Image (cartoon, rainbow, N blue to C red):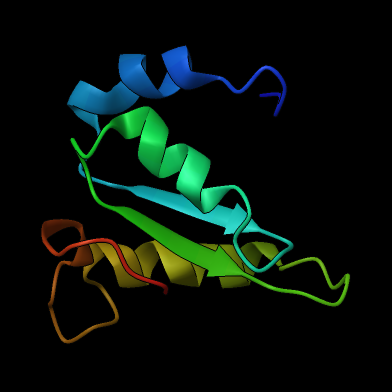
Amino acid sequence: MTLWPFPRRAFVQVGPGARCFLAVEMSAGQMVEDVRLAVEGARPVHFYGRTGGVVPSVREVAEAIIKVAGGATGGQDLCQASSADV
């Protein structure tokens, strides 16, 4: 996936099958707003980011996905909630 041009069509195509989206960035969230615009409010968009040049590990990203899906939040399914930072 590329950032320019932004792959809006990819989000539209996967949208009907997605419960929510998780934007994973090595930044303070510059792209999460682009994702929110691409999904046009149809699904919640959550954010997991890290600054300082440290790449998130596979485990950290997997844990963020599990948290959004409700596996680490006491059963609270964040895909049913509004957009939030993970």
